Structures are given as structure tokens and as C-alpha cells.
Image (cartoon, rainbow, N blue to C red):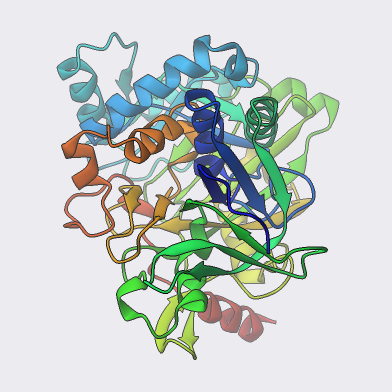
Amino acid sequence: MSKKPSESYIIVGSGVFGTSTAYHLSREHRDVSVTLIDCSLSFPCPLAASYDENKVVRADYTSKFYCELAIEARKAWLNDPLYKTFYHQSGLVNMDDTGLGRKIIKNYEELQEPHECELFGPEEMRVRYDGLFADTQYAGVGAKDIFFNPISGWAEARLAVRAVIEEALKNGVKYVSGHVESLVFNNDGSCSGVKLRDAAKENILQADNVILCTGAGTAKLLADSAPTRRELQAEDRITAAAVVVGFFQLTPEKMQRFKDVPVFVHAIGDVRGEILPPTNDGLFKFCVDVSFKNTSLHLKSGEMISAPPDQPDQAQNDVSQTLQNECLRVVRGIFGKELANHKFDQFRICWDGFTPNQDFIISSHPKCGNLYIATGGSFHGWKFLPIIGEYVVDLLDGKLSEDLKQRWAWDRPQDGAAHETVIPRREMSDLYKASSAIS
């Protein structure tokens, strides 16, 4: 058993929340021991939601709170040398029939944030971008239902997270490769560390504080760690949810045609998906914005828990025909004839920790001393990589404002919604049964 440092933190999970926390904690407190743990030898972990080619960076929220928070993050993407090399200001288009664009613009105006947003209709969209969106599905799209923000964009996800971890390591953070099997508790029930599965040497790591940045695995880890302690369980506070993404490689000719496309979100009718502009090497990504769960009975705790499949790679590339068809639906809905004959090169199921109102969880666990939770990205947390760790450190230092403590608390009202369009209402098992029926 390892010796417990006098002032120490273990961070479980090297996704956005864990990486940002490790980085900011190591900057703010140079004299403390910080250990970042994940199950892969390299970082970021391929199982994490943050392990991706690219992610959207936007402040275009109907929630004024997250709009303001994302404006803060966007400034870092634009100006901080650590982040700006990975940021691409491609612009963002969002087609929506709920008045979303007007609400976003109202937030910018009330926050007195300069913006260049526009609202227009299908006829204008058809002629922009050299006619790439001439054959988009516009049924039900009104004259002011298309929102455009030229200063939103995307970032190179995996590379950005890796760069931040590397900076954290320079600051003295230790990265440990290992699968956290369970938390370890003192006699008084407080958390004292973690137990690793199949560790090469010592399988218990101890610290004064343990921070769970475990996303989709949070509920299952708590249940595995203390199945008889009902007061520790996540219950409905956070669940594992997934979306499917598809990629294909553009030829040099197609790359020339598509290189300047914006992020495009189609939220009308049955399209329900988005595209991200191609990466520098021509990888084009499509995402279905309709999520699903994987719920089963956790035998030891008796809890019904959604968690990624219990396989080494979480069956990320085992994508049912039903889900593949949904990706095709997004392509056809956004590009129509422009990409009528394309075929995907690969698919991936992306899991994230999802909260009922899509507020993050940045909180101490009220029923377990020395245990903190910083997670719940809810498919909109990645863009906050540059700043979210600052708020976690504020919590640890007792400096987090009272309103943020309440908003991000473990126990809180679940009012409002920050990203409600992707609330999981389907079960993974049903999608795979449907595929079996098709085949």
C-alpha cells in the first residue's frame, strides 16, 4: 500500500473535466501532489467523450448562464497560446423551429456581448457556401428559422486535451495508467483513495481528496464501490448516454469543395443531426443528435443503472444498422444530392455523463467526506476545457460562489435545460433488436 501524501489529490478520469482540473490545480497549488488516473497507457483515453477528432466551440445557448460561461471559454480558445492553435473559426449554422436563434441573440444583447449573428430563411442558405446546401431538407423551415454565427467554430478535440495534459505533467502532475475498480473508504465512511484492477505493483492509491471526473462511468463506479450504501448512489443525478457519429475520408477534390463549410446543426423534422467541418487531413464527421441509454440492473446494489457496455473498448465500433441508417439520414438531410452516393468509413458510439437538466456536477459528495464529483458534460461540456477546472479548484479551495455551488450541486432542483434536445429517451437494446429485425 502506497504512502499517503500530506496534501494530495487523485483525479479519476482524463477527459475534459479531469484534464482541466489537473491543469488548473497544478497551476494554482504547486506544492500539492496531483495524480491523474485513466485506463489507457496513452492520453487522452480513447473511451472518453473528449477523445474525438473535433468538437463544436460555441457560445450560442438559449441559457443565458451557459452563454456567458461559453463566452469566457471562447476567449481562451481565441487568445490563449495553449488553446488557440487548435481552434478553427468556421462559423455555425443552426436550423430550428422553436425560436432558438432569437433567444440566442437576445442573450448576447442582454449580456452586452458584441455579435455578428444573422437570422434568415432557406432561400438565403441555398446560395451561400457555393450552393453546398441547395438540396438540404428545408420543409418546415421559416423565413427566420436559420441562425448563423460567423464567430463560432470547432476545435481539434483529442490534440487539445493531450496538450493540456502535457502541460499539467510539466507542472508536476503524475499520470497513472490503470482501471479504477472501486473507491477505498476509511472506517468513518470517508473516501481515502482508489483500488486499481490488474495494477502492475501496488493496487491501492491513497490521497487526501478524490475527484471523480468519470462521465458515463460515474453511477456504476459508485455502485461498484459501495453497493450497500444507498446514500452514495447516483440514482437519477447522472446517467450514461450515447450518440453515434460517422466519419468518411474526403478525396482531395472533395476536400477542396467542403473545406470551408460551417458547423451545421439541423434540428427540424426527422434529420436531427449535425456536421463538423473536415479536419486538416480531410476527415468529415457527422453526428446524430438523438441519444440513447444502456440500462440494466446492477445486481449488488439493486440500482437500475445506464452504463457503457462492459467490454474493454465499450463496443464503441459495434454500431447497429439502425444507428448507421440514422447517420445516413443526417447526411441526406443536410446535403441531399451533394453527397447522395457517399459511404461512411467508420462509426463510433460516444458516451457521456448526462444530467437531467444538463447542468454540470461540480460538488463535494454530501454523504462521503473527501470525495468530490466534477463531471456531467451532457454533450455540451467539451468547449469548456480551458476554464472548467478553474471552477473545480474554486470549489476545492472554498471559493466557489454560492449560486454556482447550488447550480452544480450533487443534490439540487433539476429546473431548466441547457441542452435538452439530446435527452436520452431510447434504450440501446431496442436499437439493436430493431437492427436484427431488419437483417
